[in-house]
Image 1 (cartoon, rainbow, N blue to C red):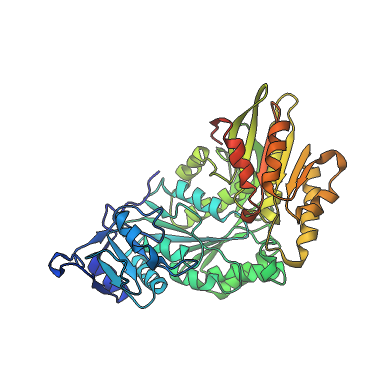
Image 2 (tube, rainbow, N blue to C red):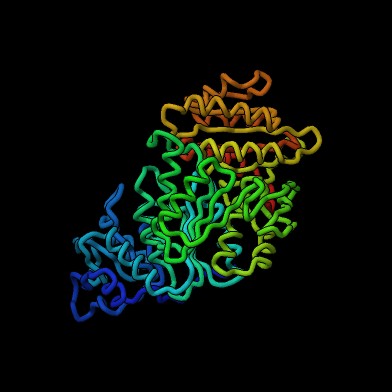
Length: 485
């Protein structure tokens, strides 16, 4: 995979100062030894725990004031710090770039990085599948050039400008995940990125605590089109009930063309057939009317949709499709997003599917479908471990109860749940399915470890705040080997 590289020279002092309008300076010590105008940086960081030597440290004011960590940043090897003040805890002579507001300074760096890069940018949003689609794009676009994308789900008001500010001048492609919890949040972020291609993976019930309807969520997701560059392309989920609304908003925003993906007849990138196997799946698709059949490294019908969206985007930015399709067979899911682990149990082995990164009704249904399609051996069972889905507003109780239908349809054998909202699912489950209800996820660990048997497949899913990932971590301690899927 070819990731864009900076070769240690993403920003020089003068470039960063010109981009932000900030003042280059230092404080304390002997001015003769200052290097305030001589530094260069290979990256940017807002967290001293992950800062790499040579990074610019951006002292954001968020849950904590980043200015409190200047000493730690320079001890970790920061080349300079972007600050709104020159506090006394700055090491003597340390290079500082002083701006009025550090978040705005980060945005200014992002705009400058975009303006000096001549590659193609792709923006991705949706109620589910954003990060998976971003990673698929990183993989398939690497067959055609150098790709820049965030290593994590940096999709919010600081994550997007941070990712864009780190865009190397020589990158051929930039992929940007754009998220939101409230209406109006995507507009400024897509305005920063100015994508040549904008993808909406799906629209579904998520963050309903902050929206009056799913249609309102569709309107918020459609904000991504307002930032499209001239001749921009909108990539839309053809099967989604809000396809028409999304297309209308894209047209109003000036999208020059549209590509649809889905399973329904009429989609430009259409999934004709899906067959799971032990290491991934095989897809039969129609691409602009041409039939194709190929293996992919990630199982899950929902992931097939994400792959079609990524292939559509690859075509839109001029990447050859044949190498991109071939690259799909080498994919593997990330931790918390479908990674499979073989774990040791009494008398043999079981399989864990870790989907614990986050959850809403759409991604929960997709993960349960993935469990239902999993191959079990011998007398193995399909076991679901589920944490609460949060930020669903007044419909939360009903949406949790409805999960029972998906579990029955997937022929799941046993279900273990945690959290107050999951009590509603527990009450809805057939008695034979009930494994254990616990107030917190950690209360499930011992029981699950005791009941797992050879051949079982256990899938773990829940919102981040449900802490159901604790179950995945506990079972991972018993892993034998991680299988590529």
